[in-house]
Image 1: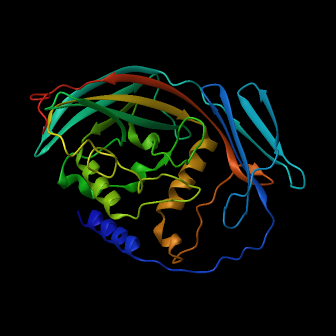
Image 2 (image 1 turned 180 degrees about the vertical axis):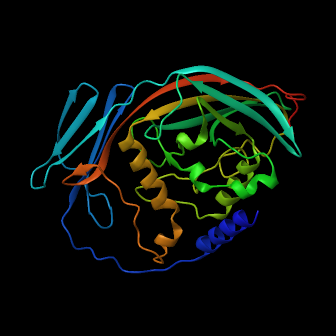
Length: 331
């Protein structure tokens, strides 16, 4: 618990401090590019940006060349007057989930759902994954009207307060990903998963776990608004009704709510994972953002400019409902 309180105290301090300083605007504009291969489809975003501030300038005509060599994908982007940008990535194999199981677990005041994905093999140290959890709510009001809403959730790993000593923010590295662009403004968090979160072939996580409430508390106390080019991260956006996202109509009386979950599980290239991790760190490394330690989270695999070239393959499971006693009763 002391470890968690220490983290939480630092986060509160970071949220309440502002340290203005001037940036040296010197330097030439460079091309910022994201080249993403997602399930075999290529998405390229290219813009002009200042290398220091990351401020995006007006669009310029870009010429894009791409090439495949087996599972190797390479990209080159150029425009008049600037150094061309190039990068490459290795497309990971498809995700193979051999089994999925779930069960409801009740520990103290926590009523969670235990989810387990079993892959076709035990991931090695150099394999990288990610998961998106889409929660779909259908609510019925006393006046007979109904409403639907989609929000994104976060996988949890802790069920009780006594386990909070093992709370580790690296288990919750997140960036927004809409399938085409990494780090956008829309709250669509992709949670990064590594070998650490696996037990052999099995990836286990919880819905509505104890650490989910910890994360909600952190989110509620962190600043809102724009988070820069990194986008998203654990500190921005809501995770459900009443926790920062757009909630249901407060002027009506709810009488019934149904919830379903859809899981998209990704296998990521090394380049995708490292750039996503760097994005998360650039948002959440508040000591660096405050100027107290060097900012050492920058990573890129492109030459001549900014950005990254990466790849992903994914499989989508669901929607699923996880019924429980009084499931049709609105809290």
